[in-house]
Each structure stands twice: as structure tokens, then as C-alpha cells.
Length: 149
Image (cartoon, rainbow, N blue to C red):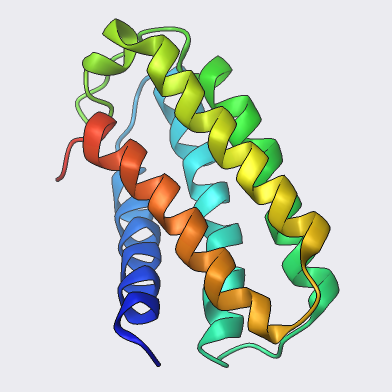
């Protein structure tokens, strides 16, 4: 397995673990809704990653469903962040709201990328480039708009 694939799988797994830990003790309902949305996105990324690592059987239909769900969730992301809600457990940086147009553009690019990948997805060999492309979009947003905890 190439280095880029290993890195993509590592990034996805980090998002999943940190999302699970971040939810405990959240008091603000809007922050909790955002966190749940991001966790759902991570769960769908995990489907692709687990198939690629062959820890889950490859099923084309499941991979396509995961990609379509990532797209749907990415489309919903700007609405989930419209309200500048705060909570000590929130991992959202304040610059999301100062740069909301850019934040929205990144979300819409992820949605479009996931849609395009779902439309062209045909085989196990499509998993690696799909995970790499989507992981890069996630990383671009998280690097700029997410606090590392």
C-alpha cells in the first residue's frame, strides 16, 4: 500500500476517534448537531477506508451510498454552521464565521467531488483515489477551521 493511502486512512481514523471523544459533555444543541453531522461524515469515510484496508468486504453499492451520503452531508454543513454557536467542547475555529464564504466553498467542493466519485465509481480500484481525494478536502477544511484538541 502506498504512503498516500496509509496517510489517508490515518487521517480518516483520527477524525473518527476525535469525533467520538468530542461529543461527551456538549451542552449547546447547535454545536451537538454540528458534531453529529461531522461524525456521520466520518462514519461514511470509514466505510471507504475499511473497504480499502480490506477490513470490510468490498461492495460497490455500499461505497456509492457512502459517497452520496458524504455529498449530502457536505451540502448540509454550511447550514449547520450558520449560527455561531459556542461550547467549550466545540472544535470550530472562530474564523469559520469570518470566512464563511470560503468555508462554504470548501463544503460545496467536497459535495461535488463526492458526487463525481459516486457517479464514476466502478470497482475496488476506485477506493484509493476516492479516499485520497476526499481526505484532502477534509484536511483542507480541518486545517483551516478546526481546533486540534
